[in-house]
Amino acid sequence: MTKSDNGRDSASRDGSTRKDGDTSKAGGTGKDGLTLRIAQQPEADELLARSPLAALVGMLLDQQVPMEWAFTGPYTLAERMGSDDLDPGKIAAYDPDAFTSLFTTKPALHRYPGSMAQRVQQLCQYLVAEYEGDASAVWRDAGTGEELLRRLNALPGFGTQKAQIFLALLGKQFGVRPTGWRAAAGAYGEDGSRRSVADITGPESLAEVRAYKQEAKAAAKAAKAAKTATTATTAKAAKGPSKR
Image (cartoon, rainbow, N blue to C red):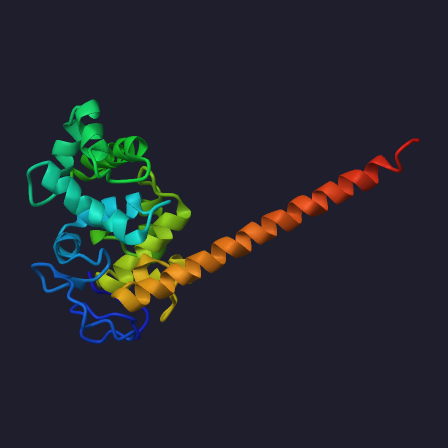
């Protein structure tokens, strides 16, 4: 699907018009010519470019670990399963303990390998039950950005923020652009932004996105501290002067 409600897109399907100068860094190219530079490892990026399930799993793993670690995860998992791709049916039916061991084997696939193994298996079980195991069916016939956002938000492990980021990734780098996709993706859909994995096209933009995340985290921490201090002051004032 290549519908678009905005004539300007920050990345082309073949990576030939990147705005951040990252085209010199080798990426992974899928069978349809799509080139990605998210994992910063050609083999892992090639899998992301050709496998819808790998892209979904990478997005699922993208929390509390570096982005490139998360998106290298699908490639490592496929290798440990003795395959060149991820099979949702096979993962859904895998023995839970044995599947967890694929994540916990050193080097671990995630900071929290046990819980993430469970989430990946739940995601695949949902895809089998709702989409006959076809990950791309989640977005293939979505008529609007809002509809696509609802579908993504319904996936196990995908909250609103993760769903919006993946929607932006689909629109900016995979050419999946149903009407209103940028609006549905919120700030992550903004042209030229450097907020999430959707904006990573190489080492330079990876550094910019990482800097943005660090700044946002620091701001959130400061806001929380200020709120705590205000609450403490208000509570103290409400108690009145201490008795002596």
